Length: 301
Image (cartoon, rainbow, N blue to C red; front, side, top):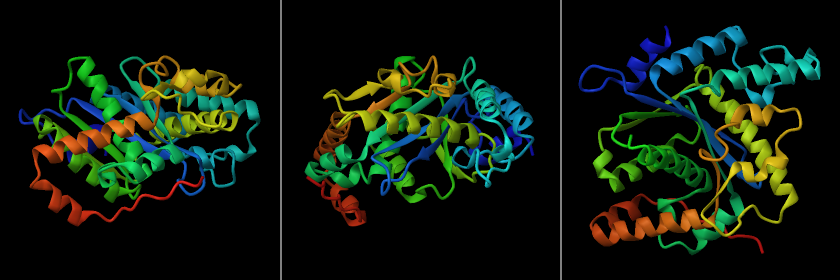
């Protein structure tokens, strides 16, 4: 089954019978329990570009599943454990060039877990933002929507894809909240969860993983990545890009406009959005509170 057939099944079709005009593939990197920073990253492109990426990616990987965490280990399906360091670097750069191409937008948001949890502890409506992975996914969605708004493309149909099992429940709630608060986009946005073997989720895995590694290196050099503004361009931390050139190959040309560290102020803003929403729609509050199961974690002093 090729990309066009899969997209027809997974995404449905627009009212005119055409495929949705933009597709966004996102994956997560890092664990809240183990890392100080987590990342949601991926790319946005129209279906034709996505099909080209898929074809080139399958040719490069020979149809085997790529997972950055496994790359260079015995678990790698590509057999990269036995490759030289130079061969591994060249291969990652080859994959980077497949997705970092004209008319494809590499996107990411990284968040510092302690900063998000601190905001959630003080927020009026923490359930509308957290937990942390949801907050990061929410910021990644808003990053994408902000780009579309600035480019006067906000009314295009867009379908978001995440990995199946990758915090599905949290992301589904995030999308439900987003749709409720931005009703003018209702019917123009969709989402689905597909398995890791889905070819177009693998470039998203590469992007999220490479950005996460950069964010972890940056965090190791600073007491906090938060500089007091809402968000920070990824290229602010360019000195922490990998010396082998892989980071630059993946995010180059996008690290000033589409790749960000989302700081505490971003999530304070989201809490303000929720506060204003419930002020306008007080009848929604009991229903949302009934659904609430998330409790913010205390930040260690």
